[in-house]
Amino acid sequence: QSALTQPASVSGSPGQWITISCTGTSSDIGGYDYVSWLQQRPGEAPKVMIYDVNSRPSGVSNRFSGSKSGNTASLTISGLLAEDEADYHCISYTPSGTWVFGGGTKLTVL
Amino acid sequence: QLQLQESGPGLVKSSETLSLTCTVSGDSISSTSHYWGWIRQPPGKGLEWIGCVYYTGDAYYNPSLKSRVTISVDTSKNQFSLKVSSVTATDTAVYFCARRVGRSSWFDYWGQGILVTVSS
Image (cartoon, rainbow over all chains, first blue to last red):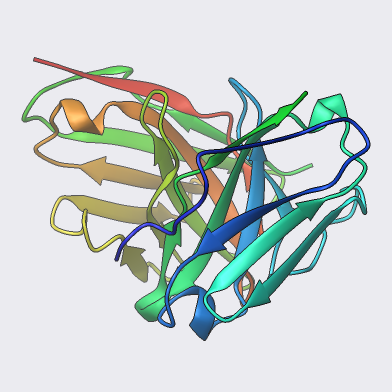
């Protein structure tokens, strides 16, 4: 069970949009529509922004969206705000009831 | 409002067993719709899924930790627990408990996390 692959860092200017990728295999991301994206600010617990590939919990801005193609899931944030600066983690279901995280991506808003 | 709260020693000696408890308030841990899990984060690193438990006691573990980890549930106390045996410095991390909605990837409620340091 290897960790999913995310870029270590991404950056963007206020108002722009960015995409963070999360690459796995046919045994995790490619095999199930159970992928979540979590936002984590320093010293805080993670917060789910997207679940089940492209569903958004109540209260999460519609500037956050998710998608999946093959073995890669993506998180897109449009209209970047300074408050979006945080670490973003993906997680996917894997066989036998287990889950695997990506390594995390640090988003910097320039 | 559902709340999860981790508790346990913040310092554990190398080779001993790390034991943490997550107390759930505002909902019953006997819910048939949810799973209760543990996730950890070493200082400055990413998140690692440790495992989860259903109210029946059925548990699922990260294959890389399975030989050292036990997760159990106590419905009478509305708590679930984590034990990690034979700890080393690499087990030093912030440990989070969280609830997941069944048949989805929605980890909707999290505890604040507790830092556990393994000392030699």
